[in-house]
Image 1 (spheres, rainbow, N blue to C red):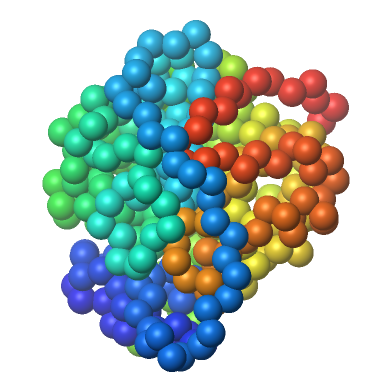
Image 2: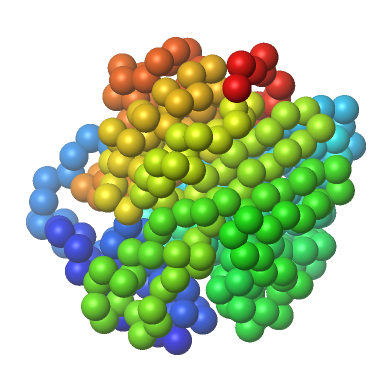
Length: 308
């Protein structure tokens, strides 16, 4: 299905023509004329640290690597998962070098996809990972997209649980049905359960990947304390927004924040891709826990001492 053109502010977006996969006014193609607006400052990710097959090998710990965009690799004692990998084929200019290509990945036990926007569900990436990936997991809607291109996928309702080796995953709610607010964006009425997050329990601690979402206060501010959060702090109305991202961060004041959804896409006038770690550090409790990872840089997950 060809995705219709969506105009949003100063930026013109067009989507991938890929099985109803729609980029949002928060995510999509950023074609615009050079004279349209003077380019503003944009915070950029640190220089990429490429990695290879060794990152997928046996291990006695849980190691996380940011892939750029909102993507992460988790190696939990030899069980390997990727969350929202975008490693090729994105339809906007990017600011980073990818830390690894799909062809260089030797194996994956699972790929987890939070929702269908093309900066999270990358059809080119997922297709080229298929020969080495045992299973794909997402919402029921995204599962239908995956099955349509022959991926070995599983769809889950919100609240569902599944295991990948010793890793236990719970599907958590998200509020990101932006398409319904922009008539003509899609012929489909999107449901709240079409988007999700993941609560990922490993032998070495719990990782929370909230996914793209507006704040759901009763959910996002009242979780058990995770040991790391894949943290989107962009100031976008269809994400937490900076003010609410600060609320989430301060609800878990000791949890390391692995920053994502920033510094990867060359779109300085487009809020969803433009969090600035320096701004965040001035607003949250205990700013030393912010982890400004370079794409490919390893982070070792360790359990926190928890009071809640």
